[in-house]
Amino acid sequence: MSLPSWRTPSPWAIHDRSNPRRNRRLHRRTSCPPADRRSIAVRPGRGERQEGSPMTAVVPDAREAAKLRYLIESHVVSQVVAEAARLGVADELADGPRPVRELAAATGAHEGALRRFLGACVAAGLLTPHDGDRFALTPLGAVLRSGEGSLRNYAISRLAPLQWRPWERLHDTILSGEPSQRAVLGMDMWEYLDTHPEEGYYFDRTMDELTAVVADKLIATVDFTRYGRIVDVGGGLGRLLGKILAAAPRARGVLFDRADVIERAKADLAARGQDGRIEPVAGNFLAEAPPGGDLYLLKQVLCDWNDEHCRAILDSCYRAAPGGSTLLLIEVLRPDEVTSSPVHFFDLGLLLTLDGRIRTREEYRSLLESVGYRLGEVVTAAGGANSWSLLTAHKD
Image (cartoon, rainbow, N blue to C red; front, side, top):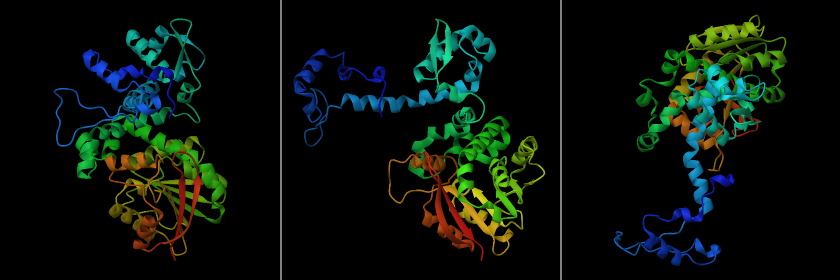
């Protein structure tokens, strides 16, 4: 990780300014070439407790300390980005630089607090100062503008209480192995979304936009023209199903999700002119699925649930599907060995919020076979931070 020069502390920052005598001792111990300094053992000072064998410590490398400090403070940057998204700062600056007073009036913010906040946005790289009291968007900040490819909804959703607050109890979850979301929010995720429609709106939009990222590569990988009736189970607002039907003009679709999601989806389908080819159906996929599909889709559904619930969802699809039909799982797969992949952050977030998990190919094979499906081809559909995989299963 490279850091801006202003984030790199002076090597002298490790000194204790309140104890100059100790600083002189530390300086004498470290007065050697920098290449050797990291291996110097520092004995505890007078009055410092020693247990057992003499305690030794290694003087931290200043560059590594700077990187770690940046990681520790990164939650502040995340909140600044999310608040810029909530206020719509990028949209307000879309036509060029504006003074703080105008931005305060447009966003309903306190002028003095907003001025300080915009300074933090500059530090985060979202804005640049322009002619004194005016601010302008940077290319990075422009990604928060509303529209195609925007990350505005993603920033708002990811930093909202539903997904942010469970991380406050990470320690409890690591000790107990149990999700912290109910303890923090007083209810599970789906109950929370039902009772907090504003967060539900941004959550649905985010899932819809993330789907759009992989949809084109999915369509390029799978020949959907082979299917006449395609059922998207847990399909949200129907973005994926709509793109699939555009590539398979003779097929018809069924969009299946919770009642509150389906109500929002109806307006979206009508706006996209797809309400004639997609039938919206409300229900609970833990108990049922619409019958008669040639193809059943489950995109990033099973990762949200534990094994018991996954088997219930798969069984709903299996019972509804005719013989010879296909099930397509679109999921992130966990590598067989631990790597530096961000998939591990995703996996930990699922443990905190949903008792879900990222699974391996063999774990999905076991789940599918437990309800009667046979796993066939597994291919990677899209790259990025978390590569999507397509797992094709068959009901014989």
